[in-house]
Image (cartoon, rainbow, N blue to C red; front, side, top):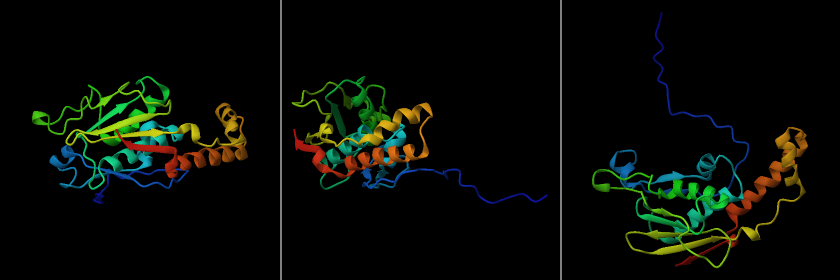
Length: 217
């Protein structure tokens, strides 16, 4: 009996996404990944909106808004270089148990690496540590819209990003098909109409910078 010696790529995955989004990825360096040889020195992780969807478990205007908050905030905070995990402090205006801030903070944390007291403490001497870099109820903005601040711990530069979700157009009557989808009574046409309206709204968030305010704080 001959032995099969064909190499197997254990990292290969298959994805069956039913939707595509048009949005640039986020590049962020991770000193620990570089030190341990996961990344070459100076090379960033490339984080896509798909990665954010995997973190949240769904795609919606809240998840896409969080991705854009992180993207726009880091672009402004690091205009000439890639952001660096362990040097990014994140302040959220709302509480951790808030339905909006809870989902958003998980995605923002996924991108920036910033965590509360349960996060990675760093290598020997705390190198690359990301613990205690995420805080909730940390600011009092003038708007009820979701607001996050990003601060570089190496320079103290601070950027505040507000997502004006109230300006986002509604999805139209097809959004009302969700209940039938959940209870299993929706037709294929209703499912398709819902998906088209839902993801069109998500794409607006990913594309329309006018939904966000980015300013130095």
